[in-house]
Image 1 (tube, rainbow, N blue to C red):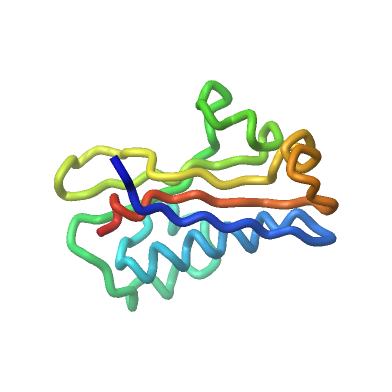
Image 2: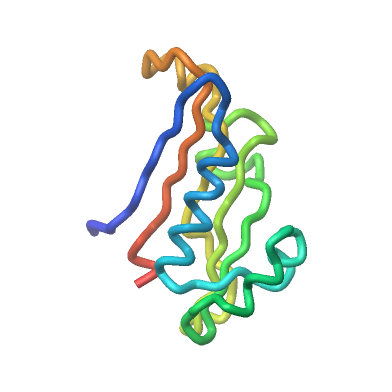
Length: 127
């Protein structure tokens, strides 16, 4: 089955993890999915959340990517996260994507000269 996904890579003098993390938050804002309260509590911009437009019952959070995840080897150990979505349909958290700093072996395989971070999200889950 074909699924709509979005993928982005940032490469530069620094890994750009915070750039990719910001992109994830922006995509979730544009698709009107609100962060969970626990995620907001860890943010310095928590007060802004009362102005967010979001769909009823749709929430997301970001958690450390488990080392046993199938894509964990793509990322530098301990420098990856999973995006978990709670929708009104399921009511439980489902992984819809991952992001993190790419493993040096991946950088070598793709001839990327600088540190890089990437994100991959399943857009079908957000629509």
